[in-house]
Image 1 (tube, one colour):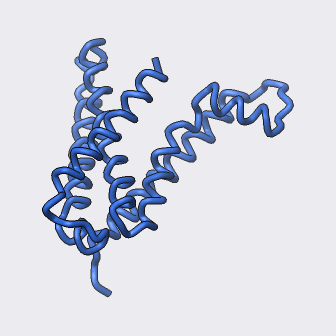
Image 2: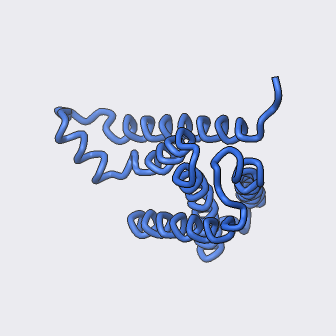
Image 3: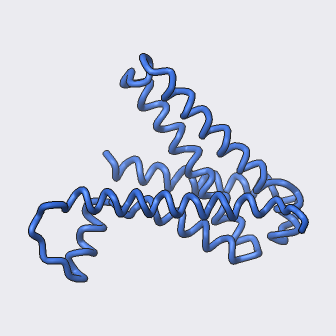
Length: 166
């Protein structure tokens, strides 16, 4: 069996779906634990929209859908997710610098740098010429144009999440 570079993306995106889903479910249980509340379809939709518990799972699911499309659209979905993570890390880092939250704890700073480097590595894998051209059937001449569009989409989604968070 030959190692394929795209399998790293499959594993990472699957693990991110598990992490985001388990985090959303645990937050949902913690939020409504001990409250006598009648759950039905309309109340659960209201909870999901109002409390934004499952909002972070949406970009992960979209990137997983991108794995099933072996064309430009699938590559855009996957790449915009990695740019989304990158810009969220940058926004978190900037917010913590402004609020002086990480100045006394170097471990938090190192963890943030580690995730930043992992994300940049995954962006490198997605933009590798074998993945870009052979797996997703894109033209190599248009790689920078497609990356710019994906970065703008990822930045826009990150900005929307930042605005909705505050």
